[in-house]
Image 1 (cartoon, rainbow, N blue to C red):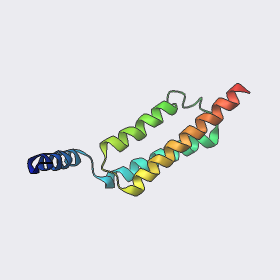
Image 2: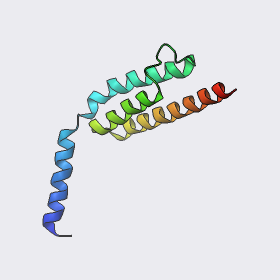
Image 3: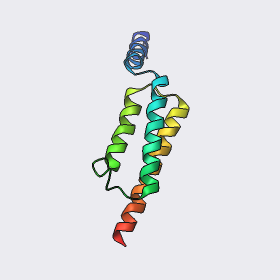
Length: 98
C-alpha cells in the first residue's frame, strides 16, 4: 500500500474518532441501560413499558456503540446487555407460547 493511502486511512480513522463522543460520557448511559434492562428482565411484565420494547433497547445500545469511542470494558458491557436482551426476549417468547 502506498504511503499516501496509509495516511488517508489514518486521517479517516482520526476524523472518525474525533467525531465520536468520548468514552467517559458513555458510563452514565450504560448504567441507565443496565438498570432498565435488568428491571425489564426481572419484572417479566413489559406492559408498563410496552412502547420501550426489545427493539428499542437494542437501538439504544447500538447507537451508544456507534456514537461513542467506547473502551474495551464498555464494549463488553454493551455485549452483555445485548445478550441479556436476547435471553429475556427468548424467555418472553417461550412464556407467550405456553
